[in-house]
Amino acid sequence: MKKLQKLMLALSLSSGLVWAGPNDVLHIYNWSGSLSDNIVRQFEKRCDCKVVQDYYGDNEEMLAKLAAGAKGYDMVFPSSFVVQAMTKQKLLQPLDHRQIPNLKNVAPAYLSQSYDPGNRYTIPTVLSLTSVGYNAEKLQKLGVDPGSWSVIFDPNVLRKIKGKVTVLDSSREVFAAALFYLGKDPNKATDADMRAARDVIKKAKPYWAAFSNASYLKQLAVGNIWAALGYSTEFFQASEDARLTKRPFHIGNVPQREGNEIGVDTMAITASAKRPDLAHQFINFMLDGKNAAQLTNLNGATNPVSTASAYFRADLKANPVINPTAEQAKTWTVLRELTPAERRALARMWTEVKVSR
Image (cartoon, rainbow, N blue to C red):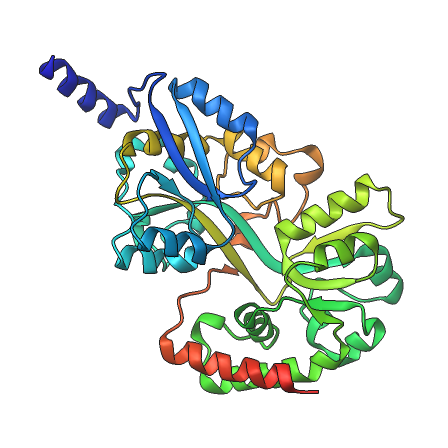
């Protein structure tokens, strides 16, 4: 029996297959609503196992729970900016790439980023572009170009849409966008660059309606806001809402030519996982183009799996954010982790912005 078990393990490692049965369970700690019931059922059928999910609302909640010693989870889906913190705290285990043959399907532009060189601990799964969502009819009528960050930061442009613009209530996101507008790389910004970005933001602020992390989706969808600095997946939902309710306008979303920040949610295996074998199989399953495409069709996410686009909804294939060219994807930046000193400096400048009139 032991010889047979060893043979089966060797075959699984070499082929990427996993030996499982109906009593085997994969425990996932995940973002709420990020996986459809259909894709979970498909994986359960494929592996002849069961999937049990618990949910979290933000990275801090997930990180705090695992850091406090929570056990029982095989997989988590951390955003890129907390991966280094998790590896430093030994909350994740290294991946066995031999068990993930579909890793070859991931576009090179999204691999081996600074937060996880060589993808030792994580594989990208859902991407969201910090960009501009807009009321296509209103901006076209006013001659405003949403393909530039000037729609958010240039007072000469903002005068045309004053009070109809929102930005995220996030110092990192707004400063990164302002730095792109100035032609600077947010990951290499100097103190002088940051001060210049602060001044740009302060000059633009009087034209904005609000700092908003949540309501901008609904405000765009009903027509109260005409331009917003936010996340592409949110703009996708606003577009769907406006379409389904038959609004007399369309919500657009395009990348900005000066550059954009790309947010990455990843798949990872916890250090305490009882079934890393099933976790590896799930990762490999989600890197199949047909399976990966279900995520994009569900939430409008940019997809790192190059073989997924063939299975996108027809109306999403031409979307420059959801289905970018390889050249476009290379211009998008994953923000690096800030040092403690940089975080303090950013916090001070953000306070200056917030109290300015």
